[in-house]
Image (cartoon, rainbow, N blue to C red; front, side):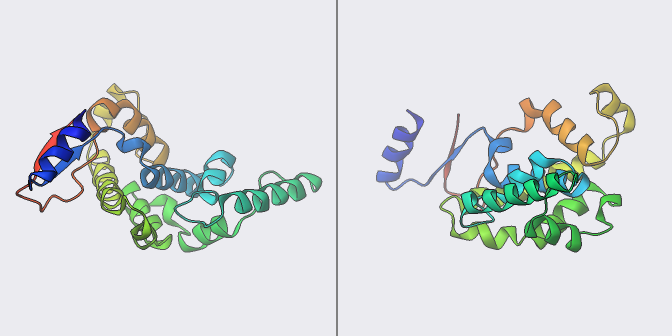
Length: 193
């Protein structure tokens, strides 16, 4: 319904931006949170698997999944946990020593080292992905500014990557709106769902 209304406004020459929920489900946000988790806990196989099969980072997620599974089988034969993958190695090498830094610094470095802002340019939703990445970095700074008592009230312990993800989940009702993709479009009407 909102899309039809927006279409009618656009046909009339009126610029329209639709503000939607789903910030935390945005592929770029999911990728960054998985990368943050993989960086801080390389034994988190789910985060690592999600990272190495992300269509934002790899051309063939199925081929990358096959490589990952073959590595996991090789590790199992040697009684070693986990698996190896070039993206995990790259992330670990580029971000060595970063886990002791604030979450906002970790997010910035992960975004930079994965070349995420460049990679998302080829996607139709580039502007929205970019806005969401910037919002996530801003939220990390907001999280770091919270007092220990405020975090404890929410049931969040620690100002680390795990605490940040817990804080995002606890505050989901207030943060899950995607930011305006083009905030410079002063003449646009913003429709909210």
